[in-house]
Image (cartoon, rainbow, N blue to C red):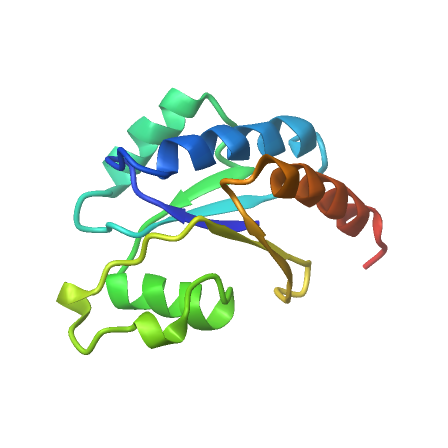
Length: 140
């Protein structure tokens, strides 16, 4: 799975990460299960800040990875690789750009996006768990 959030968010991120915790709890015993939570605020979300956040979530960071990097690379990946944000949102200046999306991507072993889910809708989160289990059970 691939998601975007930022550690200081007071809006949608806490609710999304609570739902994401449900996904993690349901699937963390699956050997090929992985969540990639990318920061959409890399200026604030340093490696140390993400480690502190991960520690507060009390998750296995080999299965729920919190990532930061260059803002342009993070946003490009969200819009063009995971397709969880509209590429038209890309502003001319990366400094003025801000990605804040509640959408999550279910990604297969080959890196192909299988489906997009709304991380604020409980019904879609439950469906994602069902779909992820099915995907994890498929042979390579």
